[in-house]
Length: 213
Image (cartoon, rainbow, N blue to C red; front, side, top):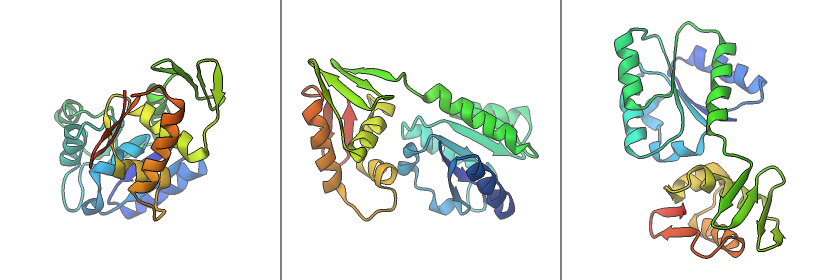
């Protein structure tokens, strides 16, 4: 599970990061909301978002996430406890809402529940090619294909966002994280995927990214 935590309280942020990592959760913590790159948020399994930030509001970030078509689940973690505040966030597209103070164990349980709802079936049909996410195999026309680790991670990311254009920057930040690679690497792995998937399964949107049909 890969979580993005947007929280400006350094004491809370540090303690949450430490606790979640002790539970085998990968956490990226942003304490300064000026450094939130909305285009890269689709690479996380869940976004945990505070509302009262130093330089902006969580509501504005949530609105921008949904306006950009990013479907990543968002859990609001805030001291705002009124029904009106909750109503605003749910109308903007929040998936869950937890008020401070809270039990970290409850946060973890809610995160796991959100991820379970997002997980695809382990058998996925892509235009006649059968992708088995448990055995990490692609089966097509009676043949089995094994992919390289990075190609497999890229395929799973495309499946997660199937039907939507996935920006090249999002792919790089998710699959290659902080490694100094460029768009030419993405093109090479897209080429590898096209060799095993039916023709036309992956669309190129020039200058933007790729879409799995």
